[in-house]
Image (cartoon, rainbow, N blue to C red):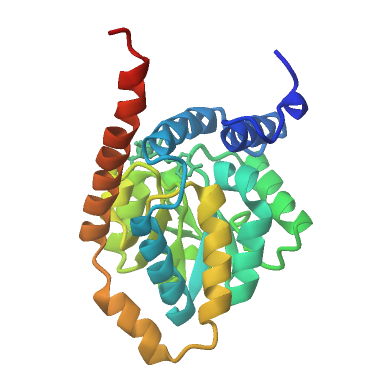
Length: 261
Ligand code: ATP
Ligand code: MG
């Protein structure tokens, strides 16, 4: 197999291949669990179905997410093994722009991997990283999955949890938190439970969020609140599914032409 550096940027699947390679590297460096590879594969499949671009529905969810993060009193950005592999610098940059701490929060917890992710984030300039010394439990989850930190996710009013598991997402919402997620599967429990669901690849969503937060930082609270009032997550999920259908319908015609008469 050719090395990834041999793949020219003009390759039609370049972005997808590079993203995949970053997750593989994450596993090799001990920051991403092996299950992260499966999660990435599932994400890629859904990304293919929306045409590997930020849809209008995703852009609207990203705008609402930016408003929610700017309005939050105690926002926290949660980082798992896949986010740490794919968008470490962007997570740190977003955290700085909204004045939020980061918290390492992984599904298959080992103390070693939590420490590696925290170190990885610090190497990108993160100042406040929680997660290495959890001192609280999220109600309704089993022991290892429930671990959280006071001053971090446990006390947050808004939690940004890209690629979160459905159960934990539900548990955070039950605690009364507003949850923003990034999940390419608009049908997942995470997607349906979250307050704001961004159906976009995390590698596109993060740069978009950073620009939006920059653009909206000086806005009036009332204008930001207006965006949230008008926002309807169920409608966004429905539109995300429609984007898949439209994209598939459009892609079918060239295939038709290729097929033998
Ligand atoms: P749930 O428990 O919410 O139903 P799941 O069990 O279907 O979720 P997991 O494998 O636990 O899914 O989590 C992976 C989720 O993250 C999938 O829905 C996948 O589409 C999404 N995902 C994976 N990689 C990315 C990515 N790079 N960007 C955005 N979403 C992604
Ligand atoms: Mg799951």
